[in-house]
Image 1 (cartoon, one colour):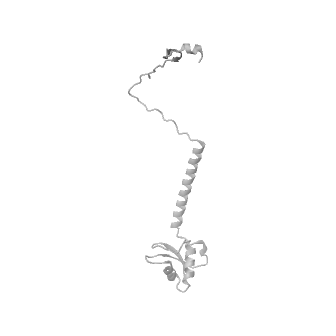
Image 2: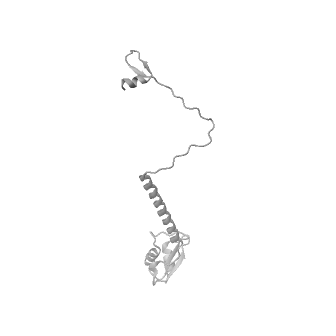
Image 3: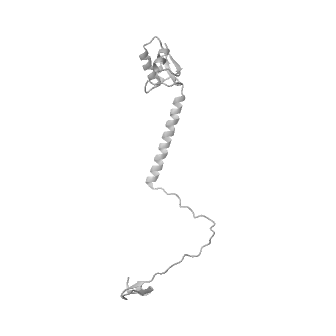
Length: 143
């Protein structure tokens, strides 16, 4: 601060009278009305580039999950014969309580080897294991 600027500011002296310091001024806010009629406008949401990428990624993820759920539901309700069943006589059975895949295979084709029939049932229905549940619909080869 130069001498001209120091002279323009109101000052007070310190105890040792060697330094001048600017005096502090208290500024009070202007009087405002006690009743406000409108809320302050909220600033619009602004996303950074990273934020836009995250929002777009979440939207794509949501659409993917929804399409998989819809496709799974459509496949579960489909009662058409499997693709690999050409030239084979097929029938559809509903698994009853207490039945196993072995008993379903024996009932489906009693004259054939039960192990081979189980293998065909697993392939026809795209089963991941040998567990079946009551009420489940299965395509089975007929004799």
